[in-house]
Length: 428
Image 1: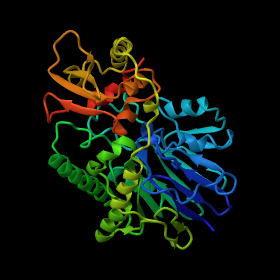
Image 2: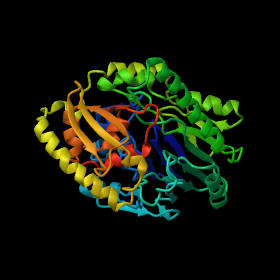
Image 3: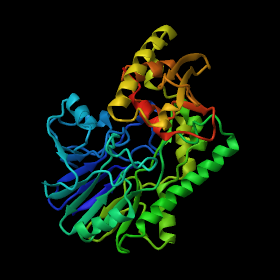
Image 4: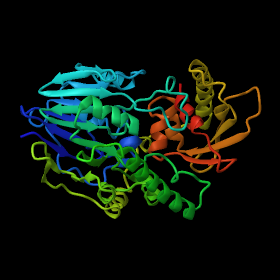
């Protein structure tokens, strides 16, 4: 009997008419984003290759979708379906880990596999803060349509669609039986912004949650009223020392999102972890475990003593760290020139000052040495993490998203999303 079993975040398992299964965006192990992210609940189970599934879809390389610990326990020849990225970061990572059967699909390319028809969709829109950089920024997300018999599931995960793209997809795919849609945000704001007071962080947290829900409702206004909506790809908390930031984390729950959708006359469900949706009857055959935000944050508090990967290392000397940072600065400037970003005032107007967690000065990064920067971004971080970022063991964006960095600005509240994005190139 074809059905979809839901786990947490963006993970689900679609088992089809012929008994085969496709597992989407596995995340079963706490510690995503350099150890900081944890699941709101313990997984209800871990699916088994050859029994539950025989292929995997990974939408992008972010570790709450690409659980390397789980993947490394699978056969190296398992079919892994991924987007054909402009810059093949996920593809290279899979090859590095010896996976030999990686199937890359281009935008709107189809694949028939094990009784499923798959259609890949690359990013529906460019980044919201700068519409001009789609051709130069490494846009990594994807979505996928999975068809089995007369049932069509559109799994958008983190690839948040537009109203226009959803209308086009409904024309291309015909009747869409079920859509999964992002309902939460992920990032470092407001919880890592040192310029904000406690009251401001609480207020901004509420505003961001409301904005995410409003965006979801706005996009879904173009969806057929019979289509079933599942709030998806937003389940996480912080563990380790960063769990103290959970009170500021701008996250809701699938339960709250589904209730709001129902109040707005949408055909919405919250399957919960372990919930099973019957693709024949178009109804839940088993309700899974749901969680409240209080329960999720309690789990984060219970995991306060978890250590991050860099916390098990020795501290580097500041002399060595400054030497590496100087070389990385030169490479950052060269990379910005290569992608045509070096003349962007939203980057060149800034200097970035690095400080240790105990507020010792580490390094001043100046991207434009020909003129004096107008603004200063102060970044406070563990020196062991900074060394790992410079050595390319850890990634700047993962450190931001994992809330390992603290920020303050000389021109608060002005800030530059372009600068935060450009810092992903600051490494050797």
